[in-house]
Length: 617
Figure (cartoon, rainbow, N blue to C red):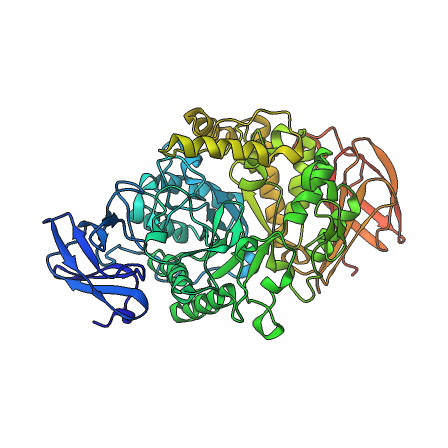
């Protein structure tokens, strides 16, 4: 069997035969050290461009192995499909796909239908496994979310980690339930009508158990990332490195039936080649989607405000399907909390938030005081459904010194206002696990490295990272198990008191988003957004061919009387966060408004209102 006609790693062929393929240009000789079922060495044949491969008999699913490099170093497989004993242990051969999938009719969701619900597997349930998530899928579906987004599940050191320290991109974390556990979750998601996305990290690998440099030039010293060595996407040997990660993306989407990938921090991928890795990746994934007959998406995280990520290739873009918008979060967070440290110094006015509604970004080329330079570019034709927005996520919560959720920073009225701003926007919303019921636990940064020196250096690095924000909270030790336990959800809260009311408020917002045409048709063109006088209030007008709505968002902590520039006509109220049913103090805005182009209203503190224009007979 030719070496270049099969994927990297151990591919079980059936009847006791397995094909091994590894890229190891730094080794003249590579052998498979098979530990089970019978210990022996299996020499591999060196092929072109540093690949080593060979077909071996007497290998069964479950067999454990290392690669022996030049007779000296034993290392796990860089493309290991499973590490049952952790990052330093042997790799395991997996059998042919014999999982009993039930999702044969699943074709995925359209982009505009996506409402993400972000989950960290280890803290979402007491068990911290894929299987434990399944009983909660119906509750997530009933909330109105349509897509689960998992934080990274590639094998990391120990049992506690955010997942961004993964070192085996193909191997599903053993403590979460391994490969079969992830398949059961994917199948169950599709059974509930939910898409399943996975966060993958292609900009760096974690520091412990990272043996890729022993095999080949996976990394480069020409660039750096905030987390260590940069991946080699444009230097000598980069063809094979790029192929490794493209194979990885296709593996997740094909083997596990995933509906999309969230690409972590692509601004940390430095690639000066004429055909950028991200463009090559997008092309490969979209071709695979066509072959599979499913909708599959690539969503990038980037802080560059560069729309070329989501522009089509014909326009000179990279062809990704969407990207996270940090600006939307920062603009809203600074209005709700008054925080002005760190990157929040670039935000704080209602007009900043209005800009985010209009453009998807706030900074589209203006001067940024935080960066001390111009920042961003106008998104041009990029549609609203190309932007994923949020009021909380793992980064914006977990990268605070105390891991404080918004529910511990602001009062209940502002939580409702935040929810309305998010879910009535024309973008794809992301809800961070527990956000919808005001979870009380923090979400802290936690690890379980086996090297005490490494663990201590990471703790010190975290302290320095927070210096610009001048937070007074002491940074918890990531290695302390208590840090992890404090981050676990109290999921039972979603049925209690104000927690239940807030969840119902989210449900109502999502229902309106889905059923009102002016809200469901995601568009930046059919939208106007601007500050109302100088009253710290934002008026957003959205329309479609069959309906028109106005969203009023008051970011004033006091009751205010103001004149709203409401288009002429009769308007009926669909939602009011100040009403007593939502534990508000009581609304001062009538159920119907008649406007001649402007109408006077009294807005309660931190109020969110939604009006729909009444159709004339």
